[in-house]
Length: 112
Length: 112
Image (cartoon, rainbow over all chains, first blue to last red; front, side, top):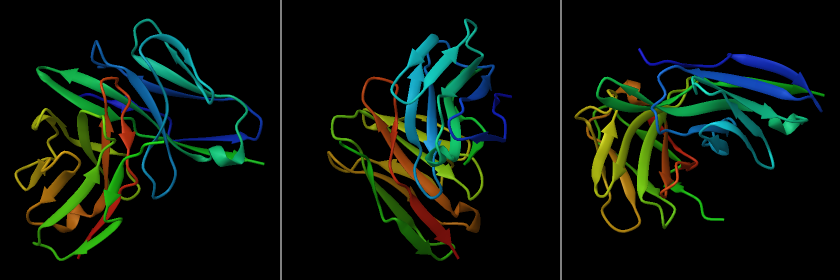
């Protein structure tokens, strides 16, 4: 059974670094790992995408180990507006089928 | 900045009725997707569409669902005979050749 798992929730304080890990054991060989942010009643918003090692953009970093069975989203110096649900999205190949699977989502609460 | 748009934002229908959810993907994108999110749950993949045909679909996407790209701009999801359990947010997404999918704001479907 293809599973993409994340911690259910995390708490942090403004200014701290937050690291959210997603486990994706059955990731398809050629697929990217993408992370999204979602606010209530809105569509997922793209944060960052990577294939291997480390990717950094203006809002986050993404760390991917060599086996690619997990990935870690790093948010530097979070603010109150970063309170949201964060999802990883990967393509999973099982037998002959291919599926796009969102992680279970991590609800991040940033406190003042 | 170009974005995916969806209409209507909220659709209320009676059980057994047909609904059509509409999406306008980003104009130069070639790959199109529909996802579903039941209230309080994670986003679930329904179907992907490329070159005027379905490329992948999940087990959720049964015979009551269909997708169409009736013209050069719209991408639709039809549910033929809605059930109570079809109540959810439905998100459209699109991408060009890179793997980043961009999501629309969603349509909230309520089946009574």
